[in-house]
Image (cartoon, rainbow, N blue to C red; front, top):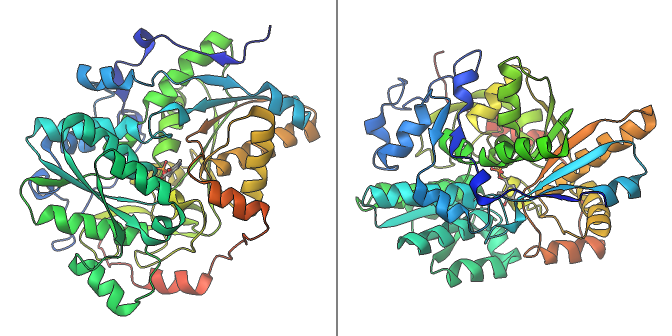
Amino acid sequence: MDTIKYVLTENQMPKAWYNIQADLPQALPPVLNPATGKPITPDELLPLFPLALIEQEVSQQRWIEIPDAVRSIYCQWRPTPLYRARRLEQALDTPAKIYYKYEGVSPSGSHKPNTAVAQAYYNKQAGVKKLTTETGAGQWGSSLAFAGALFGLEVLVYMVKVSYQQKPYRRALMETYGARVVASPSTQTQAGREILAQNPNSNGSLGIAISEAVEVAAADEQTKYALGSVLNHVLLHQTVIGQEALTQLEMAGDYPDIVIGCTGGGSNFAGIAFPFLGAKLRGERDIQVIAVEPAACPSLTRGKYAYDFGDTAHLTPLTKMHTLGSSFVPEGIHAGGLRYHGMAPLVSHIVNLGLVESRAEYQLACFAAGLTFARAEGILPAPEANHAVKATIDQALLCKQEGRSKTILFNLCGHGHFDMQAYIDYQAGRLVDTEYSAEEVAMALAGLPVVDS
Ligand SMILES: Cc1ncc(COP(=O)(O)O)c(C=O)c1O
């Protein structure tokens, strides 16, 4: 029988995270203090993050050991399977070989616990009692709620209002793990109150929810803030995905020509792509890498590579990234996890160096791709993951058109079992493609901070 799943033993799980900063041809631009315009010091980040995570943020070491306590929790669902999508290949009648790494087997249903568990561990080690965070689709919030439950940490989640309304079961899952969930913008923070004063009907955004969570953490010594994407240490923790995939593809006797991931803040994409990009940067193997984002929030394809704030109320430091402007509020598309105005500085830098291609896709075409995938492979992808599925199908059909075979690997970063309303709305014809509003983005970009560089 042809192999479908490539499965590793717990002992084959990576023992270290891979830090791409060690292999970059040019160093990452520094993070700046907005008040001074100078590179930020670790001390200035301590109110928000434990020292161990700040050290990982700036580390240039290629391998960073995964603590045993974290590896032992990873074993609840890792190593995750690598699938050969034989039935999808058949359905598309393509000569391409398609593989996908399935992160939906985690307790919360996506890649997010890979960093949630690590962040909760380092916070617990530092004596922190409570974590605040934002969540878009609810995948990150439920992952941190799960990790908080394991380490006995209180978790407070600001959930983007449109997702709070669209995904009540995600909220219920977070509460089941013991977290408190608040719809953002809320009246509980200065940042939330200011947004509501300007727009009482605000749908919320990840930028606004981050402001609320940061404000609360900064005001209390025993509370710290955890971010589900964007930061270097978050991307680092996700590299277990690509490292496992490398071993699994070796079992299959294959190596990808193309690696594909969807991008919201960049963490699942980095998780699958960075170990392969590392091999490319070290001159070992070449590879084409594609980052896929929603057309309604196209930071990589239409944003500016500039210093900007990570949040709407401007409580965070300045990072150089692809951005649509920190006041940009994307349409309420169902891929809630991809509705972020910025992009991880590491992913932005790598795109800027020409190592990664980016493309934007509309939600209707992504849902259509998700249905094709589900009907062939059985797994229902999260709406975010459908962006990677769409690009994979496009590449496979291109192979068919050109009459050549390529090996494609994509990250199926989560399942869509909590996103059924999105699938109901799509099948009932109630979803629309929202046009990227050039005017709104131009306005948001006009407010970019001025930085001497
Ligand atoms: C399933 C899923 N995929 C992707 C994302 C986007 O985040 P990132 O780009 O950091 O992987 C999210 C974010 O919440 C998500 O829930």
